[in-house]
Length: 49
Image (cartoon, rainbow, N blue to C red; front, side, top):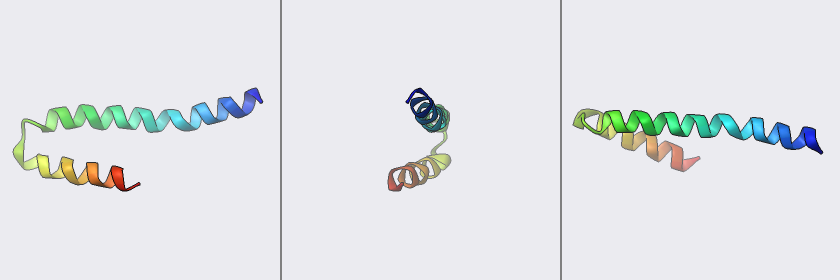
């Protein structure tokens, strides 16, 4: 039982890390209007999954 929860936790963790990383990137991108469309397309791809 403990092994299973550990496995699930490890499996979920990278997704959360990736989300926070993309959020940080989005904050940096916000100042650049050219990259804003890229951010929106990335957000669309993330929401599509």
